[in-house]
Length: 124
Image (cartoon, rainbow, N blue to C red; front, side):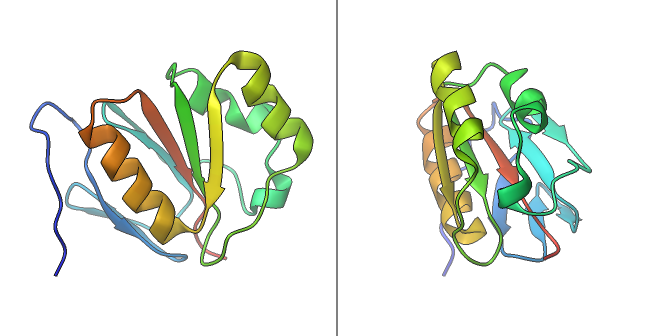
């Protein structure tokens, strides 16, 4: 059973994600993307978390989050240290986990009204 608290003030609701696809509102996405309660950025050009550079975080940072959650695919992997450091220097929390765990974490934080942005790496 899937239980999801939906905040009607959110334009975008992430309903779930795995390594190959995700559901945002009623749309099934199959390419990497960025989501916040107020924005959806499709076709985020990230194929693997190990290739995540500070420049590729710019669409996420532009949404002015307090915390960034990265879904690394089917399995947890880690972003390069320089990418983590870029978030720390900007005063933004940064967490990487599998897509399923990232979807659950994002939903909780968004439901609490936190300024959260998530990037999901799909297709690999």
